[in-house]
Amino acid sequence: MLQNSNNLKKNRDKNLKLMILSGTALVVLFFYTIYKSSSYIQSSTYSFGLIFIFILLVFAVVARLKKDKIQEFINKNKIKNSAFEQELQKTQAKNEDIKNEEDSSHIEVIKPNTTFKDVAGIASVKEELEEIVEFLDNPKKYYKYGIKLPKGVLLYGPPGVGKTLIARAVAGEANVPFFYQSGASFVQIYVGMGAKRVRELFAKAKANAPSIIFIDEIDAIGKTRSGKSNDEREATLNELLTQMDGFEGENGVIVIAATNKIEVLDDALLRAGRFDRRVKLSLPNINDRELILELYLKSIKHKLDVKKLSSELSGFSSATISTLINEAMLYMIKSNDKVLENRHIDIAKNKLEFGKKENFILNDIEKEILSIYQASKAFITKEKVGLFDENSTTLKSIFPSKNELKNELKKYLSGTIGIEVLKDEQYAIFEEDLKKADNLAKDMVDKYAMAKDYKELIEQTKVELKTILDENYEELNRLTKIMIEKEVIEKDEI
Ligand code: ADP
Image (cartoon, rainbow, N blue to C red; front, side, top):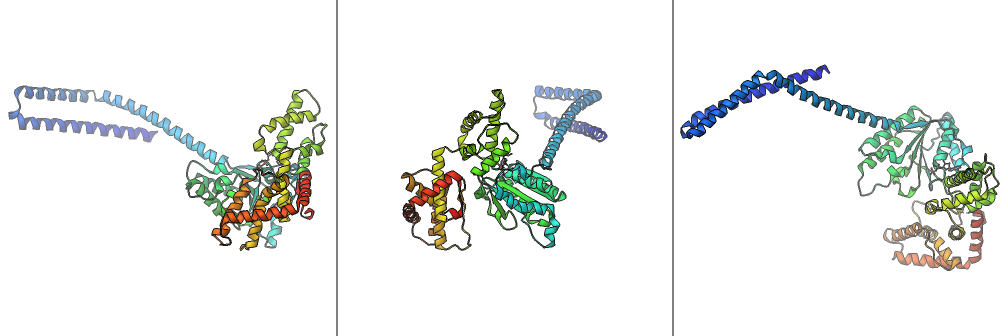
């Protein structure tokens, strides 16, 4: 405050001096001009000039006499301005505070009390993550043998299948802090803020180790770097990669990330030493849905046939099942009933069907089509296939042979041809697989010179598939029935 008023006084004096100096200079200049040019100026103009100088002089004298008043007036305005400036500064400081607060408040630490008991079904996922729990529980046991654990685990699968839930359960089981961040929250308007947040997140997690960092929707920052530049996202992704490279498992920090779109992730993220452990979560199958229903109905009085209901909920994600029960309960309460019954479920189901596309809820015909599609895939690959599995690459070798690539091509095309064989009709289903087939065939032609024309290669593969599947019509039918009933075909059933 004191410094402010001193500055104010200094400025005021300086201004006044400058004013007097320029006034004097003007008057001198004017007299000099008139003196030099008086002989050429007509008398009336000359008199006007003199009068003007006189007025100027009077004005200067008045200004000198009223100096204090003028100063007071200037001060007032200055104060007004500085009050405005102060207000502006205050607001700016406030905004800065809010920004900083937002920054650190987004990094929230949770001690979850969720455990594996709260996660129904997905037994194989739990099994895979059990090892992480054990490591976080007793890291020393692992260091002793020099075992390196993955730094990053990537959970991938459709929305609502429990990726976040299971990550929290891992933290709950191991009783370690859980740092939740959504990928989108890293991508800031200000360049550099996302990277800063990544650094803070890792610093906090390390300070609280053993701990878990969970990054939801990692695709928001981890998308393949395209031609279009997005400095902020790239800076954030680079910082994430740097941070992940910069720590070893010994730090006791495990990064778990989740995504619905693994295919769009930058390869750099999937390289060794980063998210090299990948765990797939699919839509729950019939058994899992039963377990999920049992979990949600545990403390509810009901008259439902859980087995039958679970078979009717094909395509429901775990989250949709939870919403379904919730909605049904709302109708039960609304209608003053005390016991949950089928009619409440039916009303809730109808409501959910409106959001069918997002919820991927299947009717009987749709389920049959999807079952044929997946059964054909199981028959061709001789591998276990679930009803809601998506085709991801199964190429294992770094240098795949032509035969391996052709088999991969067959896998992508088998579903559509299988449907054609059993239903004698074409269906628009899984365009993604057709795109993958196209890209692979193009690579086989352009990159590896294994064929002359990619369209021809695809056509030829389709003909081969049609012949095999036609010849095994009955077998395909049998597998389809298993798929409809159990929503999964095990390897030994093929
Ligand atoms: P994702 O992260 O895969 O989108 P979430 O973990 O956020 O899905 O799941 C959303 C909600 O769905 C959870 O809060 C939980 O209520 C329910 N849910 C999901 N999976 C399961 C499961 N396996 N068992 C019980 N509830 C589940």
